Image 1 (cartoon, one colour):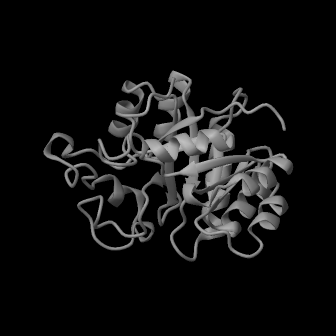
Image 2: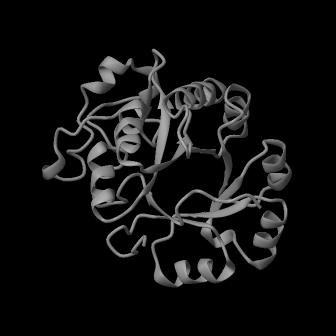
Image 3: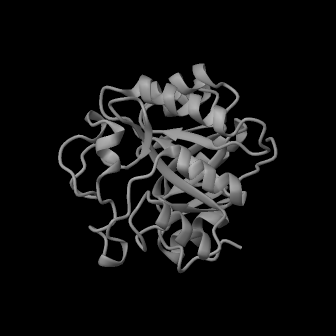
Length: 244
């Protein structure tokens, strides 16, 4: 396998549950806990701006209503994306991917960008995320790792910026997952941590890909994954697991 430039420990959505997910406040807090690599969720606004949010709908993590991808960036930028978490973060805005990229590049942090398309916009979102990431990280030593549960989104990213590394996300070992990862020329498979065993790790490593896990919040699970020889652990517990 080629040398792996990414951190073993990756902070989920910035700082797990300690701050409002996918906000700059969360990434700053994750960094304050010593993390040097982060995972985020990226989707596309109605007018083509790549912004950070996990859910298709706005209600859980913002003051808005409806489908986030159906709003313009101007409308999205006016929402409170922190008040749902706690009063300390009230008024925290949704960030663009570009804003997070500037933060990471300035501080030499690494990033796993999950392409999280609004249903029906898989190819458009994959293309937009890859195009923007290629521009923002052009000439840098370690580009972001692009991942998605949606093969169509990863395929569009592959066509748009084939030089950017890709990883297939899986929550079950569905029929053809391994062949799909190979067809997309992935450098990693990012799986629900419970899916990894010695056989699957050997299979993925044997194909030259790395084994990453989400979302690992228990000591026993982390120890098991380390013993299996997996390569990356995405966690909410940035206050418990030391990334050093």
